[in-house]
Length: 77
Ligand SMILES: [Zn+2]
Image (cartoon, rainbow, N blue to C red; front, top):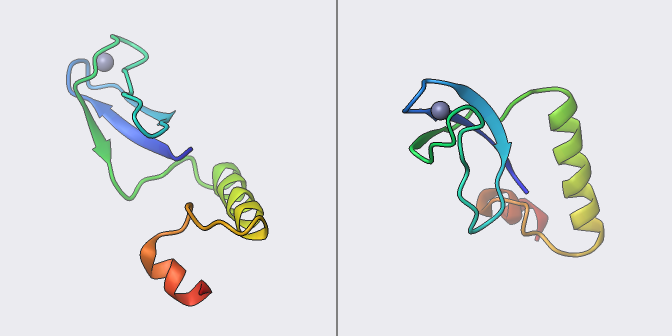
């Protein structure tokens, strides 16, 4: 499940949320779904980055690459 950063358009809160496919994120403060996803800022760095890399390594071991982007797949296959 990817972790995304969101900016709430209703109350201007910024937060990170794990969002599965088909799920709609909601603002933890005002429950609004009027959110802007902030691309390129998958945060927090460090702890979360290690967690994501771990998940990817595990996925690669298991032989599926759904966590990889197309450009990354090119190098793997
Ligand atoms: Zn809000």
